[in-house]
Image (cartoon, rainbow, N blue to C red; front, top):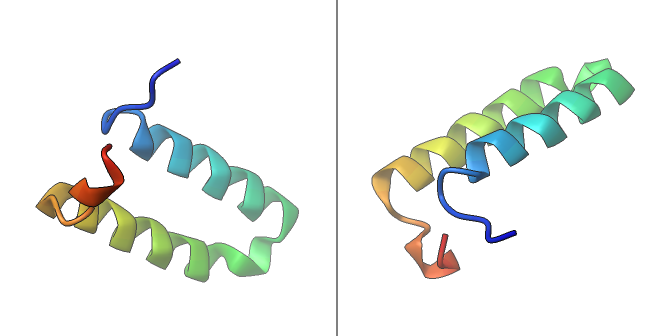
Length: 51
């Protein structure tokens, strides 16, 4: 399976959801990281990752 830019939000959301289930106190931290990552990907600043 080739991971493309379209797959990244789904993978990040899946990992965030699992972490929130395991440790609910991480909710604010995980949401902040998720929003930052989606923002950087949306702006095209993470193209060096070849996503």
